[in-house]
Image: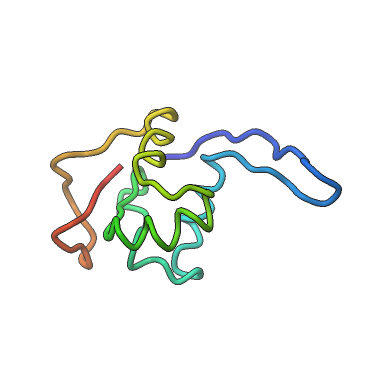
Length: 103
């Protein structure tokens, strides 16, 4: 699922502020290169994403990428952009564990 993102706004002399969908898309697109594909990745359909380990995602990724420390805040951001949690996901990737979330 692709979202049209706004052009990043400059907030300082050389810094760029990006919005939530842009950061999320970048993280998912670069998950393997960043070494976090065991925590989250695109669903095989390419229309949703899977979080395999909420605890690791909350402690390692949220503070560094989204400047948040609570998963509830991340979930509110997802909801604000129209994401919905799938309760009975189909076609999960082969490395899925018992605890996972599909959005």
